[in-house]
Image (cartoon, rainbow, N blue to C red):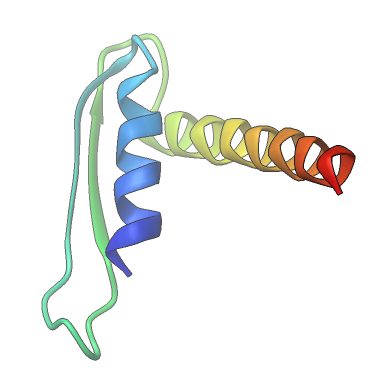
Length: 71
């Protein structure tokens, strides 16, 4: 799904250690996204990806709390 992949790619770009962040989906209906992440020597691509997912989870939790307050 491009929606989640785009959000994750953008979040990866927020990391100063990330030099390349991209993804591809081989087939629009059945393809599994493949991420390409390259980093400098400050951290591994796996660590950058984990950190990005953690930040997105925090942002999602924060947004959910704000929406709940509005109700």
